[in-house]
Image 1 (cartoon, rainbow, N blue to C red):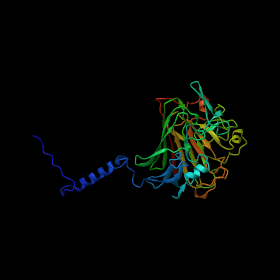
Image 2 (tube, helix red, strand yellow):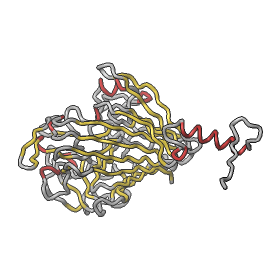
Image 3 (cartoon, one colour):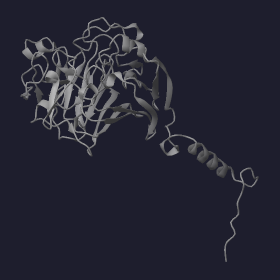
Image 4 (cartoon, helix red, strand yellow):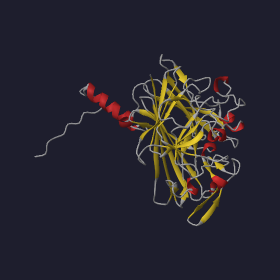
Length: 394
């Protein structure tokens, strides 16, 4: 005998209050992009606003990611730029710890030095703007003396990405995608790139990179955030630790010589927290080439594993930032070329050492250094790496 099933219609006086709430929740979930399983935690939010327009008239947007603690990151789809990042100091006061500009027009017109941008197809420098791959020589743009820097004349920092709001484990995020076409800036292969920013509810900015190609190519993606944990002044009083016993010396054009040397006994020894200003003017040829710090550190880690690469601490504000990465190396740049000609957010003039960069990466010029970890990506392979910037106070 078949059992009769009783159906209670919505609106029936016999429906239970709990049933009605469940129906309403399911209805709302089905009407959202992320669904309730991926819904934002209470207090978190994602908003989208205009950030200006490209020279060709295309609209540029800026997304504000607010986590459950009320702290925020603002990211634009132009260049994947992190425009601002606000976290509390030791007294609970929010402060913006990133250099940036007020509009996309400012970024474009003033040729900002990669403030907060996504960098590709190849982060850092390639010597003589050429490399060989599978017996063929590829010629790139010379946009840094005789070398190519950060992807060329129009790298990933200067293109408009497709953007989609995402939610990951209750935290707000932004997914950016871009197709770098075969031959763009001299690089081979159609490269499909996806970058996800996730602003976690415990104040960690996760950056997940992914790329696939249809021809052999080279890839080295990174983020070029300029950090000042005090929010003003210079970073010479910041204390830095880099988990590296070795670094790659450079020539006068800041191209690695191919050597890997020990940091012990040099101004590059940051194995324990040390004030950045302590040795920045040392009588050292590598410092003179900088001028200051603009060097690659080979991290003490197993390749491909997530581990602590660096820690940055500002005694004045109590803000602390840890850099975790799966990448084998880290570029430390001490803002040597900031010269007071750029005025950024809040009317602040960016003078020398106004901020620093800690860029996760493979070694610079790796395509010309066959003994170093490869940056070659081939069809059917997937480039995939993650770097995390964790903020706290102490």
